[in-house]
Amino acid sequence: MTYQYHDESIIKHLPEDTVFVFGSNMAGTHQGGAAKTALLNFGAMKGVGRGWSGQSYAIPTMNEHLQQMPLSQIQHYIDDFKIYTKNHPKTKYFITAVGCGVAGYKVEEIAPMFKGISHNVIFPSSFRPFVEKTLPKLNQHLVQSFIHDDVIFSDDLDQAIAKLNLTDAEKSLATIVINTPMYPIDSNGRDRSFEINDILNTLRNKISQFENNARNSEIFGGVILALLELYNINEKDFIDVWNGEREIAPPRAANKAKK
Image (cartoon, one colour):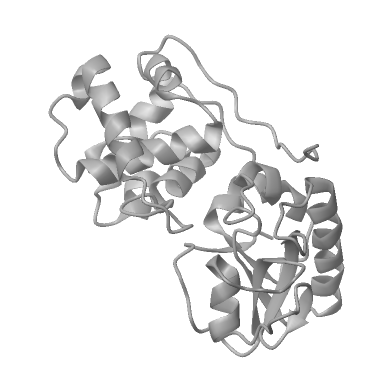
């Protein structure tokens, strides 16, 4: 049985049987990001920085002084949440990218902590590779198959990807990367335009196929940025893979506590 996923867009309403799950600080200030959404729309209460409140559930990722918690401590609260979801099987839990906004952690640091959770949850799409399928190795055939105008700008993305000569894991990666919000803002509300244009300029100077890429180029560049961040690689790594000079192994989960 697979999990359900959402596209990480901002929401203000959920069905009555679905709880909004967000990262919080222990002081329960709820001043920004998903915490503010929980306060304004899902019954989160000021001063309550942990657990159930209204139609929301807070997972602490920062302490009462608004400082980042170590990952080992966040893991403890996520483990508590896993028990909670198991004990409330008739309720669904809409999980946001907990700890990946104001708290400053990366998806690959947080997402693996949710492995093994009951299936009455709806994950952010960026968590998918870390809670379900293993990411594939990057190679020339894979990246050149889906990083292409005909796929990225297809009217029916699912069908376009289904037709590609790729493994199921590779098709899953293509779907995740293309659907990851990056332009004009990412899922955390950050403007990524400068980074995207910097990437495009670098690639146009090194890869001839990108020289005349003008069609919604920022969206195209956003797909590449999503891939770079998912695999924790840079433009040179991508160029090497595109040119068939090397292959890149998938990233390992990075869930060790920071000092």
